[in-house]
Length: 425
Image (cartoon, rainbow, N blue to C red; front, top):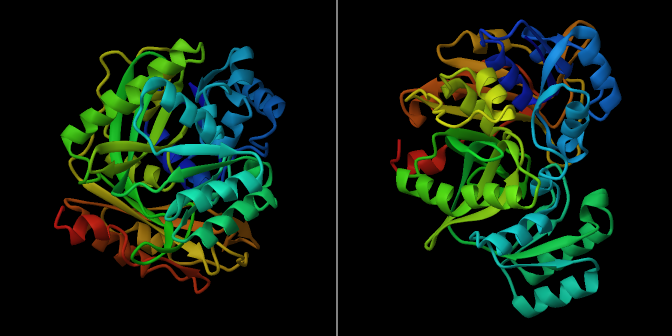
C-alpha cells in the first residue's frame, strides 16, 4: 500500500527509515519531510496543518494509510478529518489527543481513574498561581497547560524562579499554550519513558527508554526538546513495567473508552520512578523525540503492520519483537539552542558517520541550500548507534559524532550516563 508520513523531524526520519523496511509498503511519501527522509520517501510540499491539502494528496497519490508523527496535527484533529475521508490513519482523534493537548485534562483523568501522579492545581490567572506557590513552597513544577514544544515546563528550585515561570506563561512566552497553568509538586526519583500501542481497547507494550531533557551535561541548564536518549531503560525493571501497565496505562485506556473517546495510537508515558512506585508525569500521544531514534533500530517487527493493526483494532495477541541490543542517540544542536540560534551553516561528514558499524544518522533540522546540506533548526542531527550494551552503543555514537564536520553545532558528551554510571549496562 501507499503510505503518507506527516512531519519533518528526527522522529519522522526514524519512522520513515523503519516503515521503508515493511514488505507491505508499496510507496512511502512524506509531508513535508526533510533531506534525510527523502532517502526513503517521496516528499510532498504540504503543511501538516493543511488537512484538506493532505486529503487531496492522499487521493491524488492513492494513499491508503497516513502516519502522523508530531502532536500538533493530532491535537488539531487531523486523524478525524482523515477518518471522515475514509483514509486509514495511525494516531488518536482530537478528543483523545487531549491527553497531550491539555495537561489539566490528563490530571483530571488521573484523579478520576486513580492513576498515580503528582499533586496539582490549575490556574487561569497569575495572582492565584503565585499565591499557591508562596503557600506551597519550592521545589515546585510550573507547566503551560497546552502544547509548548517541550519548553513550557519549569522545575523551579526557588519560589522566585516559580513566580518568574508563571509570569512568563501568562505574558505569552508560550502563546496560547500558557493561557492556563498547571502547578505540580516536584516528584523525586529517576525519569523514564514508556511506550505502548492501544487500539482503543487492547494495550500492547512496546519498549522503554530514557531521554535527557536538559541542555547541559550532568542534566543541568534549561529544558529542551531532548538532547539524547537510550533504550532500553535499565531502571524500568520487568516489575516496574507491569506496574506501569496495571496502574497507569491500562486504566488510562479504559477511562478514555468509558468517556466515549477511545485512544488509538501510541501512548507515551513520561514517568517518575519514585520510592512509592511509578507515577505519571505527563502523556504524549505520539512517539517521543528523540526516544524514537533509539527505539526504531531495536524493533525487529514490521512497524507498518503494527500501526495498521492499531488503527483497525486488531492488537489482541500481538507481541512486538525487539533486539536484545541497546541503542543510543545523541542530538547535535545549533549553538545557542534552546535559545536563539543561527541557520544555514553547512554540514559535512554524515556519510562517513553512517558508514560506521551499527550507526545511523537521522536528520532532525536540515535543509538543502545551494546543493549543500545545511542546518535549519535547533535540534539538527540525531546520531544513533546500536551495541550489545548501552556503553558500546554510546562509544559507537560518539565515534560517529566526531566524524561530522559542523562547527556551528554542539552536543552533550554524557548521554547514557545514568545507565552506565550506575553500572546498569
